[in-house]
Length: 322
Image (tube, rainbow, N blue to C red; front, side, top):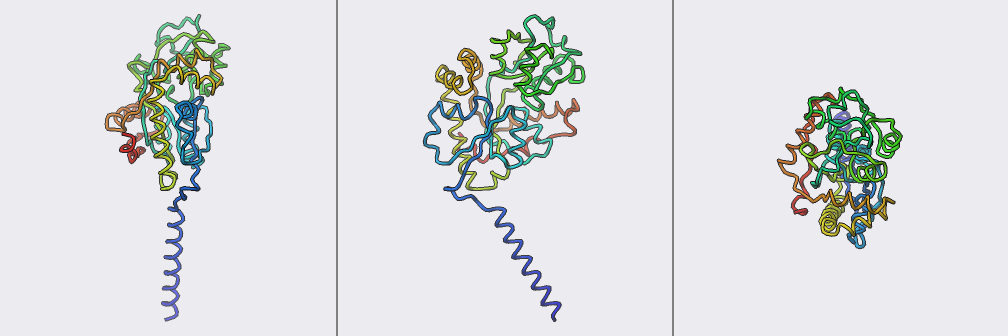
């Protein structure tokens, strides 16, 4: 009887511990204690929301962190160091390949003219096929990495036909300006800056190849916290309102962007005028396009296996964003 009593007691204690553990794991942050941790890039969301006047009465505290590109931002989101942040079309694919704890929760689409592969003004390279055997600077897992892959594929080449120098934009700019690489794959405002200050020439751009999507991506830990979810929803609604504001106030946005980043106004205005990202729905068409990009990386053997992009999408905010 004593053994039976002990077993029942142990089972009861285990049940209590399990219930307590589950409650702790699923605990929601009270609204008045929510601090939304947002990852940002150079002259990104914070500058945009401020210029649009949409941060003044934001009902939650925001803690900003700045990243050089999308991949390290998503590493932080997966680890729970930040709650969400904005990235281009390729970082979520690389994060998904690493089984990161993230999900795309909002999307936008812009022009891809500024998604460029640049060469020095006096470079002998005239066509994409001239890149064979050359060195290209690019941030690994960034939208520019996707642009390089698709551009090479469209011209009968693979990433194995070139040497990719994986450099973050600030380091890549120095290498490009000093002639240490033959080409540089990058996005605005770096494209505009290199064109105007380093006399870079566009060898090719993303038109006809890149899909132009950008994402707001949240960490799964934040998405499991109802207190954080409410803050994320409010942030997303305001962020995409700010995108629409910027599209109709381009000069005003360029001035604010220049002031925030230290870019020359002419650089900022060039970037603003040829981009114009606007919110779009996360739908089957978007997921299919991202899946095709993921499959291209798999076929190139850049990624070790197939990525199911749909598993890294969370559409719960789509109704609010509409």
